[in-house]
Length: 272
Figure 1 (cartoon, rainbow, N blue to C red):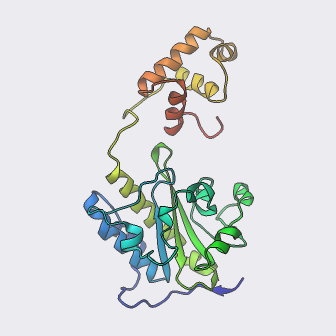
Figure 2: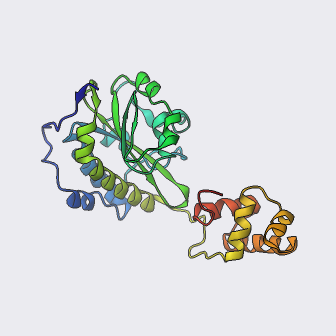
Figure 3: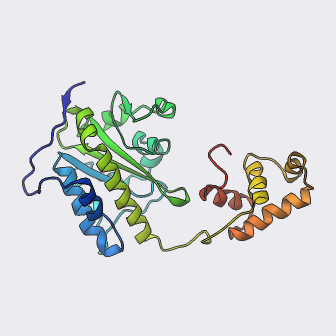
């Protein structure tokens, strides 16, 4: 498949630390920790010849910053060259194969123009072609990708690109550090999201009843109150009550938002 990536000596960077030390070093407990944690993750990746690109929420247009407002992608991770300001293109989350793939995969993987290499077969990724992504980005021909799925349906897409544009095969490097990168990236992103989350859109300690969940599951696939009542042997008025009661608990403004919030909390499952 081409040249293999090797661990590269990088001037100014200490030898890579072990996984436990790395995870602790990238832990973010408040916004003041963001800068130093990002530097640690950058330096760890750089010791293996990789550049870091992080996005904490592919549904948001907000750029990741530290406590002083410095843009992580530019000021810390060094994406400053012509055409490298990828975070300013808000279409990427919808159209780029890498963030799209993170919607369907939750474990770290690597990819090149020939496809995605995941720990377990993922038929969803077979429908996504990464070839055009790498064709449009000649600075690199492969990437390690770490999806991070957070509470409330938030999806984070993170990639690590070889500094050498000729490297197309990351098999050995991924085997060596893929799991560690996954652990460290998840810890960093989870801490960042927690530190930066300022609004509480779902009440804490929300507990739906069995009947409320049952009604919402059927409502999520388009059944009316009358149809749900026929399915579970309740009057449509009783079904409406259960849906309304769930909405009150979730602080929702309508039926659609009730279903959405219940889904974010995992009450409806993946098959609803």
